[in-house]
Image (cartoon, rainbow, N blue to C red; front, top):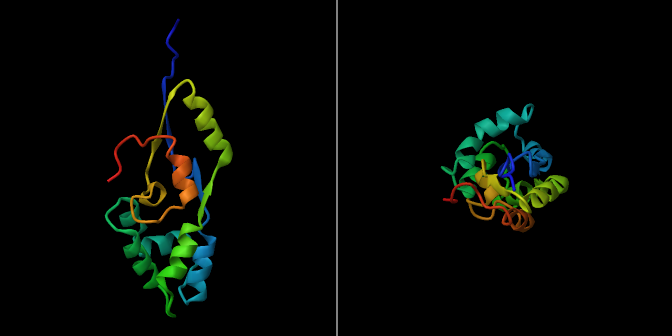
Length: 140
């Protein structure tokens, strides 16, 4: 029997297996006085890349987001909105599952938030669904 031309498949987690709905977080920040004209500018001011790279714990990210507001906002409020942004892409997860029956399937965890490496920043359902497919390197 011939070996298949493709034997290993790597899925990126963010925006492939998991979608992000930032709107509830943005709405909360805006309601607390944070100027939110551009999502990317707000995330840059909060240094999201430090969080995604694992250099900044989830609590630190929440501190930075809270620091962008002019009215008080609690960690609990921010955490609820942030954790609620994860939306599994069911058809893509099903594809990964079907492919794993005949191929090696791995996840490429480009976000600490997605992989749960920074406290409880990802939902239980996201972590549970992703646990089926190992990351291509160990989580820190």
